[in-house]
Amino acid sequence: MSVNGILNINKPARKTSLDIVTLVRRWSRQQHIGHAGTLDPEATGVLPICLGQAARVSPFIVAARKTYQAEIELGVATDTYDAEGKVTKRVDPSHITREQVEGLFPSLSGTILQKPPMYSALKHQGKRLYKLARAGITVEREERKVEVFRLELLQWHPPFFTIEVECGKGTYIRSMAHDLGQALGCGAYITRLVRLRCGPINITDSLTLPQLEDAFRHNYWQDFLYPMDMVLEHWIAAIVGEEKERAISNGRPLALNISDDKGHCRAYSLDGRFLAVLRFLPQERVWQPEKVFPSER
Image 1 (cartoon, rainbow, N blue to C red):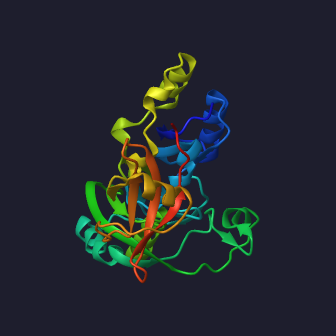
Image 2 (cartoon, helix red, strand yellow):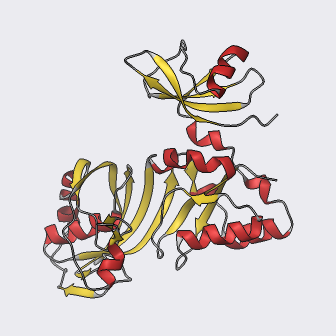
Image 3 (tube, rainbow, N blue to C red):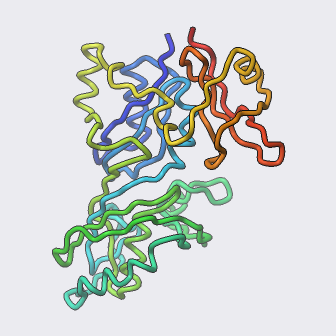
């Protein structure tokens, strides 16, 4: 029987996101499983794992705001921008002050242009950048617009300091550390990275792998599944009658007397079933079914 829902897993270091998907697939014996937002192998923290129909809402989780905590070391640069890479620069950073570091935060906040690292899963002419980098090939990467909503210095123990970042989709915290080091002239890299939040999914409610394995072994793992519409709760909910429910199930646009300020809404039946994600079409002033979920009655 297919299971639909989202597991909030605290990914450990030295495991890839795909490793976690493989484990959950083996333990759950479910086939349709994916993660919502890759974490670097050495990074830890929130990794949403989507099962069954929940995989169809994963793009909305990927697009959600995320919060990270990162420890950065000054005076060292690496080719991966983290501790896994080869050291490319060493400089005495003892002259760098907390005020100098925080003085750069405004230039790294708001809507900014950021160049992705070579060691990333992005593709260049169909090949992953990290595979090219491992082969000794460096290619030019276009800068991309990313959003940094909050950048805060939490701890200062030079040459180490810790920041917390709230950001939008596609932001590389490794690149942020590298750019800080470049601007300071001494180099910098990430020694530890933790994802604290992914949309509404918080690390305080996450499961470690031993906890998850125990839940599977004793068959209570489904108690930890979030309903797939939980990650969409920041959208308005539309409750529709049978006629509009049929229109949604057939993929037909419909008029609804609700706010369109977020461009999406959640549609439910009169008996509370999650029916679909609807997208507002401003020119026609109607709501188009974007993702329709089969009835669970």
